[in-house]
Length: 154
Image (cartoon, rainbow, N blue to C red; front, side, top):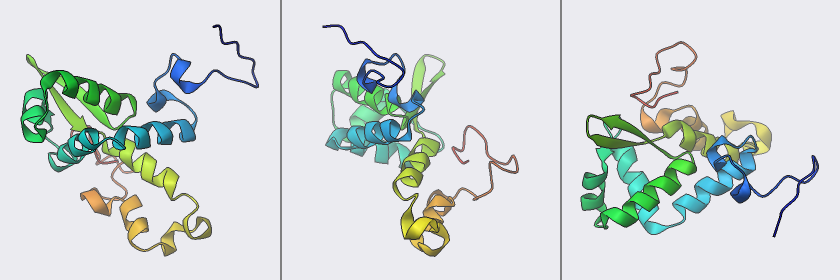
């Protein structure tokens, strides 16, 4: 079955050459992230990696911590990475996985963009989370250049 597309009807995201995290459509990115986190092992892995920021963890340590086999963990990590929630860096012979806090902040921002009639400053704790208070990141770290790739802030 061939899928054709016109400027008005693009192919579904699953058939696109771009991962959902690379999509220009915030709805596609949000759906991919929510679907990825909607599976118990992936949710546990993501939460574990958030706790391990900024150091991250090797795949073997993640597997031991969540009690899952290495081969299925690889699939879970790939799904989280495609959804923009996890990133991997090579450290010698190991691959270190880290939570992509910017990707998670984009998801939360998308979900609450219209909170309180589009006035997030009156949304209390949600507004603080969007400002970075939930992870210890200064709200203006990226704007003034204090954010770095290792910290995940900004």
